[in-house]
Length: 472
Ligand code: BYC
Ligand code: FE
Ligand code: FE
Image (cartoon, rainbow, N blue to C red; front, side, top):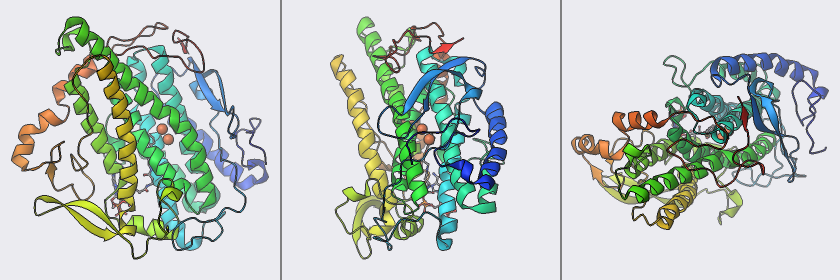
């Protein structure tokens, strides 16, 4: 089997789709439904414009992407799995050591389908959340990045739909249809997970979303890549490659916002930068608090029997499972986690297998903290004394053990009365959001940037920053 992707077929793929006529026909009948969904729920406007996009051409290590100007509806969404590993074995859970599965074992069908559906649901949800952003892009460079992310999230939907069609029969086909019928924020048919029903109505939210929420994607995909179900593992492995750019957009985008804020603070020698059309640091901190806490909820509860079952069955592991120095079965082991007991934080011993969601969340938090350090370096380098911080993991949680409690960004447990008094200092207020939205004036001249963001340090694929990334 080669790494190369076959583009001569209606659905580009590297899974030899042509050899399975039934599957090919089923996916070809889903394809126009996807196209309709893209037309109705995808990016608003710009469908007839040429955009400098990358397309996967190979799943190997080098030169996997090709860049050229294409119109969004002409993007070749396809099915790309990483190369199989010879004699791959299950690396964790009760079945550790046995051969990985090429087909779904009957007893794990429901759980695996659920995991794949939840993963698949987030991908089109994010495209729906971001559909209006093209009208307020801060530059052509950023506009191109938005659409790159959107088409790749569309491809990630294809990745999950392929698994549903290829391995779950009639139920899988029904689930694939349902993925196009739920919509972000729809009161009757919402998306499955909380964060994917929130609005992404401005570019500051978008940049934080790609930093914090796409990074949940990195960790969930990393955990699913460990799966005993080999097609899922290989699918997630390739998705992770695309995902890196999404998080880069967030990390570098927020650095640019901070840089611009510093420039204005220094130029006018003031903290009160809003009149100059840039985002003030307290507002940035509130946006961090919001997006981080909403993304923490995506890991599920700190103690979870679902997660324990997935782990012991070998369906979903921890991030970099082999980096854990334990038996990878976890039966009889204990782990400590922080819980609020009688109004104070306490460390509690819990069966290790029930806290794998929390372990995944810890890996995620450590990764998030790296970006914060980079952002704070921008502040340092510009002589600004303030630092941005990640809020405490108990802060503003709607899922899990802390959801019944009011916790400040510093981790203090407070009353509901206090919370209501302080919340305008913790989370973006209506007025903060309105201010941010008021900054969102589109800039479509190649190389120019909106008032609130500094230019990137370099362009895409060795092109200059002032390249015509979108031909308007
Ligand atoms: N919202 O045992 P628990 C991405 C439900 S992002 C609503 O604590 P579990 C992307 C849960 O379903 C990655 N409901 O949780 C990023 C359960 O319901 P049932 C997406 C929630 O099951 C940006 C009950 O509460 N991938 O790719 O251990 C752009 C108790 O649950 C939520 C995945 O999530 C919530 N936040 O873990 C584009 C991977 N949390 O069973 C894309 C697949 C929990 O009682 N999903 N519930 O009816 C999973 O692994 C798990 O389903 C979860 C939840 C980690 C999400
Ligand atoms: Fe994705
Ligand atoms: Fe993503």
